[in-house]
Length: 151
Figure 1 (cartoon, one colour):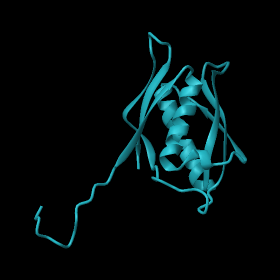
Figure 2 (figure 1 turned 90 degrees about the vertical axis):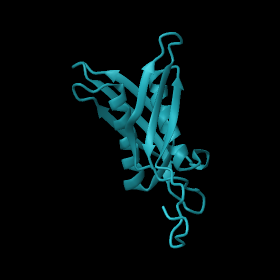
Figure 3 (figure 1 turned 180 degrees about the vertical axis):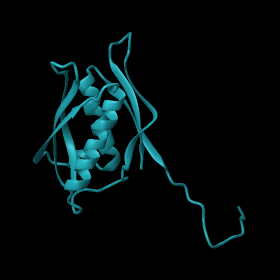
């Protein structure tokens, strides 16, 4: 880099943002990840739970809870983008079907983006597998994890 070049200036640009998760339940970990992702994008406290969207995701063979977490967060981003909504409340149920498939069902609550009321922070492009973790701590029994987002 030439320090005397006045035609450009190097600026710091964060290429990712991350969250850590801790919850007493697996469902709580998924809810916390969703709240964390939206807290990167906006102030969820200012998002009213006026509309409900339902989500259903079934695990493909070979998927684990980390894969399910990525699918969950990608689905939320998809709903955010196509419906121009922000979400602030999440109710997740994870269970095994009669056929042995792991299923996630959720209700997510939010509202249309209102630029006059919602200050948008960063735009999350996608959750990534980079440093992704989700596990149940053997000592405390809590679900712990980390998700890094491409912003």
